[in-house]
Length: 581
Image (cartoon, one colour):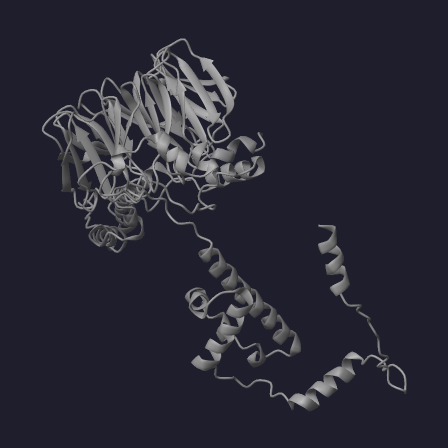
């Protein structure tokens, strides 16, 4: 070994570095001043014409895009896809002197940089997860342990089980950003945790039957439907409110854009409670029997309920009658789910059918036969459907297109499944069952690229507080809940014409001509002046009566409303910060 090292040392030649003095004989040149540099540049480039527009051809534009693409590693097609006209800006054509030209040059650089960053971000988008089954072994034969062994470590940690047989069966819920998990056991066990880091926020036993749990606008508030009343707890487990108006609640839903907590009761009542001011917006009996099946439509905030006679009813707080009532199954409905865009509705019943409905046209698209009666159903961001069949969870893909022929995945939970929820922005399905909780991996079920403006799973405390304030300021009124949200932008022409005609009848009617002839009296009182005065008194009385009728009609048409006093003003979220007199 030593001999080989010595031989290598002998082969290496000596390297000598030499330096030459290139300084001119006259000495080092002095640096040019800015004005001198501009003069030289003008001589070289020629005089500039200010105020002339340069026509930029397609070839020049492509050359510029190619130069940018070479610097950033992007192709011309990738940049062109996101270019909104920044390359067409010509700062030299702007009037207002050099200052305006420089300002537009900076603006152009800013736009071009934004286009480049957008193209780079698109290149970094993650692909949706998938399973490539073989002809010999279908995907539904794969076990969760086998999938966890093949994925990366971060995804592997998302598959876990919590065995809690003494407090089950469990109901579950996730926050809107999919970071926090809420568990509610039938025998009083309530726990909140960050399921990704496995850090426990709080754990308590309410010593009562727990029927359902639901997160409110942040992970700091959670609603628990208990034996008699509904309670609100914070993230430490402290009881904040006892909502006695929500009595004997079976299912809970929360509308984040309206700050409404919706509850359906066993006595067929449905409630809408505004949690920002603690006011009951609307409650009424639906007269449809116990409402054990309920879900929301995320697109328009309409509540869907399933009855024991196989019908599905759509409810709004602005009407005491169902907006739509449709026969979905021949037997009792056990599960309802609506996708995020509000296009598809999935229903399951005791008739061993899973049906896919088009909510826009209220007609059935597809129907799938199941081996047993399906109890619960959930739909993901990518329209992946999960159904609970006894102790098993069956996951299906391509059900909305009609190409589904067999289950995508099957998992045995070891106990009767009671609740299913897909995690937003993750390929994970949460399952609440009789023996506890299971977080199972479903590749390709969630949206791969998180929309941080909509819901940020990695938000800090300050970002959460800022989001909460923005949500309160952007809160929608319950009067705006309707089947088609685009109706708010439209004008009801028939009603408008009718109102305009009624206004014309009142506002543009000539005053009533009073025809009155006074009686002739005895001498001294039948003089012309006395007659005219009595005539004017009678006319004035008739005019006053006519004006009163007109004012009354104006009030009915809301043309002349009374001034609002402080007591009559609608309450606002920020009223508590006003100074009291």
